[in-house]
Length: 73
Image (tube, rainbow, N blue to C red; front, side):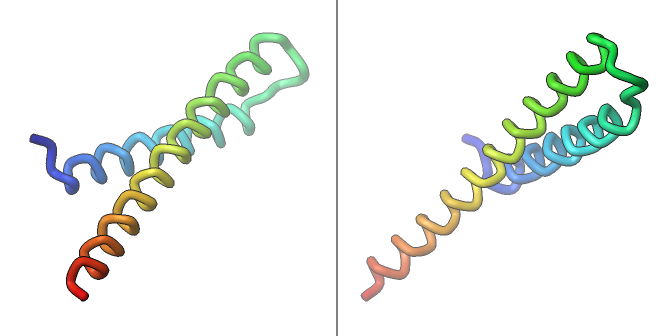
């Protein structure tokens, strides 16, 4: 069974890498070549997916904590 710490660690690692790749692709766009745009678009999609996954993990933790608190009442 997966532990939340290992999932969080993997999400953080993927998010940092996607963010770095996205920023690098944006900085390295030399003109308007199709290759530059395709690389930028690919990294933008990866960054978007990593952001979505990180947000889902935060929502999961919030909902879990809220459920625990409500069950304790």
